[in-house]
Length: 369
Image (cartoon, rainbow, N blue to C red; front, side):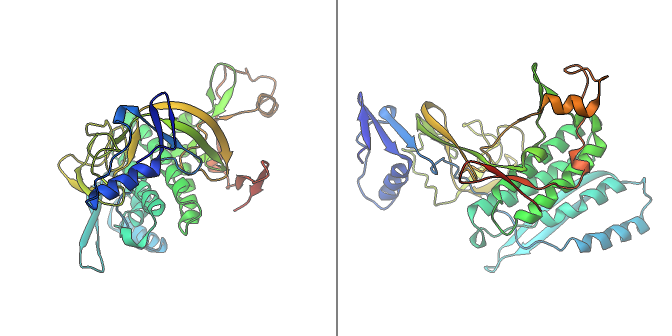
């Protein structure tokens, strides 16, 4: 396999060439790169950012109206302040006869349980053959968000806010992945449905962040309504496989195949199921079937970063938004001490004002929902 170019003994290859060579090897062809692993670099152009992971969940969604009926029945059976401990199991049988189970565990007050009960509808197991991989990824993120929010109602208060805000971040990521799919509008509504109770439960945590020179909006719900992101052109160094932690261009794992892995962080430092570096719901004692992804460990050079309406990596987006100083002072009055006083954010309590959309001509426009 020849590189697209060579510089000082280093070959620069396209990402697709690694996949092609491994497929040739799998077919029994004697194939190899011209350069040794430590002499290879990988060119990433716009549209080629390696976001390759796929997780398997989901089937059809349950109508939300059903849950309203269930809530009424539960309130008739139990006292409002009664503590509950339960596990809800959903089961789905595929066309091939396979049985898939998913569950939500909850321990806490009845009202908290009723608030997270609709999330069960987002935890139904999904059949990967029916969905594109962005849909699979987005629906898996929704499931993780639902579980995190459910745990936030039953854990100690000093942990519950962190879980609720993690659920918001996961919901935002799910919305990014489900953009331009049939699940987009429902994912958008769920984002607000998670944001409102979080603002009510933890009002002190919903505030602009002072960065030393100005206030910033870091709420993922607010940032999700800025519909643009970033697309880089760069030269990558080493990429390791999420399954085996070896050089992704040398190992036998193909992105088109699924492999049995254990949950939790492996030798790569990531969970091979959800690609999280933090604690996640995937147990080391459980086997999952996943497709591998390439984890970039070094970046040799960044040539440019473009602003695009829809980045190839759905999560390549802003982490914070600057808040206009004059607007803050005008809104809060002359007694407000800029840089010292806390500025609360109540956006999640208001109706959605729509999206700020990036257009092909480089300008922005509002898209109302």
